[in-house]
Image (cartoon, rainbow, N blue to C red; front, side, top):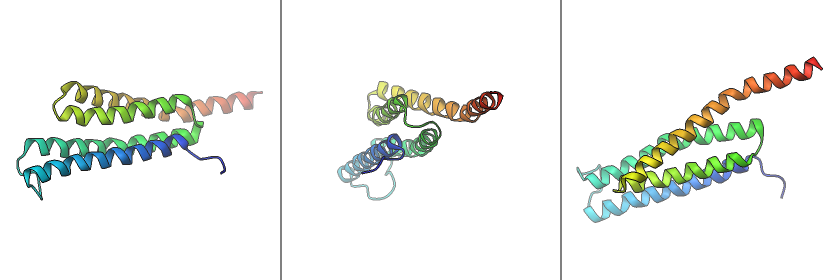
Length: 140
């Protein structure tokens, strides 16, 4: 097998797919238990689980895009693996918190925001860091 392109992003995308399936199964369990086939039936537990999955769907795509672009621009770095692990952990804690462990929700969303802001800031800086490298090479 040849070298894998974007290994951090590929593994993180796969983990996100599994988290999304887990979130869907949790919703299905409440739907079956409460006999709610369409909508939320005003059921607060179902609403919380549906919202947790939507929150995941709101953050996962942009984080995966940022990770992929950063990995393309600077290569596979150890810190990117750590960030990916933190993001997946956050996205598991958040729905657990939505089910009642409030600290999980707070930690999950705080860590998600930290990862998103950090990746966005780093991604935005890459062209400027590359510009500095180009100027150094030209000056030599």
